[in-house]
Length: 303
Image (tube, rainbow, N blue to C red):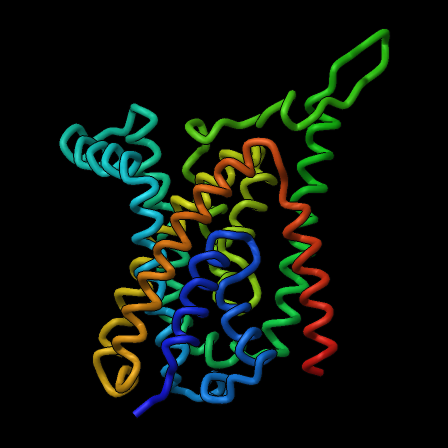
């Protein structure tokens, strides 16, 4: 019989819902926070080959995915309808039809790698020190994406005034590639970066947003594509873990998982609502700086 208090379950559930969407790594925080607060019942299980805590964390993905589905339900109704239309017409012509197949192609690589390596990578790297180091790397990746984006704006989004080039702002120049014109290969590349989120400390939303910025999307489109891509991936990851929670790994934690999943869903809905507004005018810089500072401090602490 495993032990997980409802207090810890609720805290981790809220943490999962927020950090899955904020580009700061949900798994990284789920590993680091219990270690910082010395929640020994949870910390000691992360190194086990069959960890009830890691099964619990992945199970929370279902709640997070439901929160995303609730927020984007109108989009998903259109996209799913468009997908079935393409099966009938055998071609994708409208933006929704193209976007449906874009999500499918972009999800296949992480789906395959996740099925094969997800368990081994979580057991191997879901430790406080490793998660701290990857959190630091995550911050550097976020700032890298912003630097690339700024250079793109300065070189490709210039205004010529009196014979001089004047760099324009991100808001003025906008994205050089609209999401509805993104090619299938480029979309697949962006989706494939989710593979790195299998390492605790690397953010799924963060790495896909950076890839979107590098491919020429603006922050708003990069965020939307990231959140839409995350929905089927984390939903399937959570659903695949439910049988484990119905078995021995779930003994003593099933009701806590249900409560935590509800918390994760509410937190995810609130987080995506906030972030959609944030990325209309703001950037990844604050999140990158946070990850670098927190990752550095935790690396020193756990070393």
